[in-house]
Length: 103
Image (cartoon, rainbow, N blue to C red; front, top):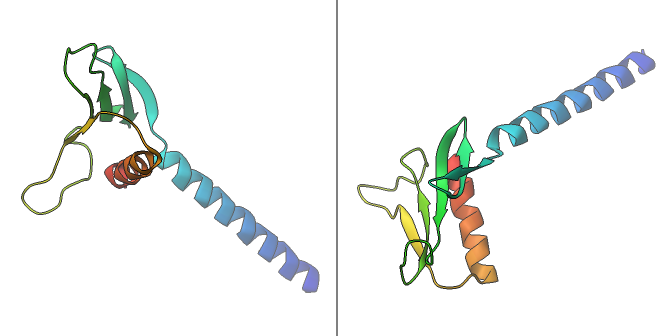
């Protein structure tokens, strides 16, 4: 009986790892080019994208989110962000936004 209990526990641990791996895989974005610029897609649809300031002759780069992103808050929310430089705090904020967009 003790051996069977160990087998069941080991099986449950393996199943929970498999479930976690499947969840992680579902959240992973696939990199792709979108209009010649880097973008990330989920299920083949672009969720977020980057636009270079140099390529578009703008004074700042843009990080944007498509309508597939889950960023809805109330009746109005930002769909793109201007970037003049990238700090560690900005990187953390982008990570939060991307996580929310695919969550």
